[in-house]
Image (cartoon, rainbow, N blue to C red; front, side, top):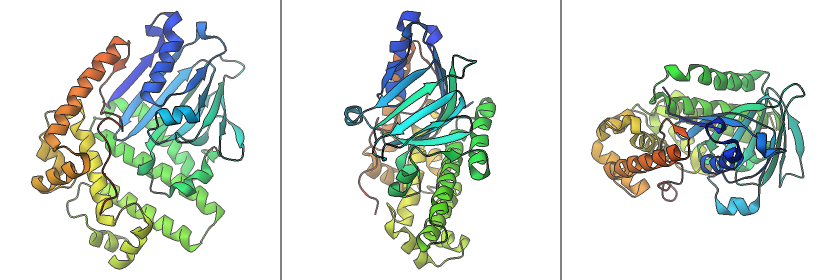
Length: 362
């Protein structure tokens, strides 16, 4: 089954539940100021599935409010996009820096937030119920193949989930939860890729509706298709800029021009995605017996020496040393979680555990 972490406030004495919930949110997401109408009767349950670098979460809790302040952002910021889908109850959100925009969201409304920007959120229960539930994604900003300045226009805006691509994204989120038990840990990164592609498609559709058919819109759409193609074929060692250009019926020189305004060249973007997936697999306790060279082959590196050299250049450690350090940290983290009454199915270190790739790829 997929690697999963579960928090249940019912596992601890009532007097400790709210404080432990606040600590858990800070550890598993970001530090937040959290308040509740009555902390004595507060209850919360949260599940997190590890989908590679993407995390799928599902939560049910008593009414509460949360604030992400500039001070908390300076204290810790994993640079995530936070996609929320209310399933029961309503959510009122204000993302600061967006002309004081504020709205309420309910069932089948998608809303996107940015952990690098302050926001306030209030979750209220329906009249007939006393608990709120929802699901969504934590996505590293660097994984989304859209310019951050463009995505900013869609923060705290209703993204319709009752039609088109939005409906497909909601179906995907709910079906992953329904079928998580039938998936293997190695399926997680693949599902994470699908999640990023669907979210990117939803956002691109919304952006294109504002400025359809412009040259920039067509360029962004083509880049999005190219990056989705790359993600689907990462395991193929024959994946090259030339084969990508051929698959999209464009010249190789035009493909390189498309990536001139991206964060990396085409070849570097392929290498970065492969390294990210390999790093996740090396840090996964469930895959500790898989040889390093097999992990490299799985993600398109045909030569072990090339993989080791690229991995060390990106993360500062050879693959074997990184695996040893990551697995040791996972054991210590698991022991810590168990001591705090969390049930942890095991997952790779968070984005900040061992650093990020150094600088801009060549």
